[in-house]
Length: 411
Picture (tube, rainbow, N blue to C red):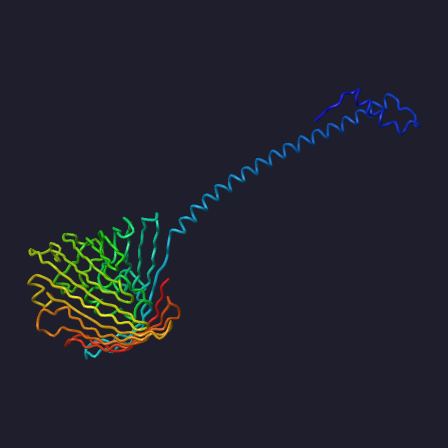
């Protein structure tokens, strides 16, 4: 800002008075008063300019601070967005209604409604080659002391891709055995309940803790090898395979297990699979003997247009006299299931099942069951189910015939 001297101000005052030459010449006192008023105005202008400069500087600082805050916020949002894009959440569930009559005179009927499963998936991709996957399940709606339900972690593992064809995983994961053990979401199979052969013989759902390696090849072959925790079978559990699952819950680990699978999908619509399992001591060191366990499973799936047929066979061989005495040294089962899907909504099926958890002696211990029914998909991920079962059980055992209804979903 430029400031003026008193003489200059006097010249300005005189120039301003030229138009009024005709007026009387002001006295020195009046001129001094006029100069003081002009100086006062100029001082006010100087103060206003100073205030505006300070205000502009303050606003500039505020703008700069706001810009910095927005940049930091954008960075945080970017990190959150990246995490969100690499994290997946999913799940599935199924509600069942069973109206089954027990043909055993002293047995109880099964007439109940049950939220059989409620499952949530959580996964995260750390980078292109490393990821995490987990599965948390609540069975029968309510868990706790004296309740019917359970809370279970069926899967919790990290997986790493060595290259395009080979990957490894470590943690808790589903065993490479059977058809529904790894793929058991309700819209993926027929029937309200999972088939009894894979339930009692495989035994689905079956998971262990350990290490696994998977390989996939362009000709349609794939292999899986796993070194895991093992089953724990005792006379108190009738040596039944399903009763030997430890579910990686403070599991006895005196004896681990080795399992493997080879699968072929090189022809459109065809899947062929063979799995094997070996454990050197299913007693987990709790008896003086070291009794080994060997299991095999094979299945075929063939789909042609809307028609599909599934066939599966599984068997177990147990060493040891205790298992042999009750015939549990041999356990086996098989089923065949044809199905036909009319369109995206409707499908029908029939299934014949046969299984025996004490097939090692001549005692009648074999079950057979025939199922037939319908699936209706409200959406590819939501299904309504209805089926009828007819069961033939060994003498003196519960034998259930009747209707099953269900609703299932996945997301």
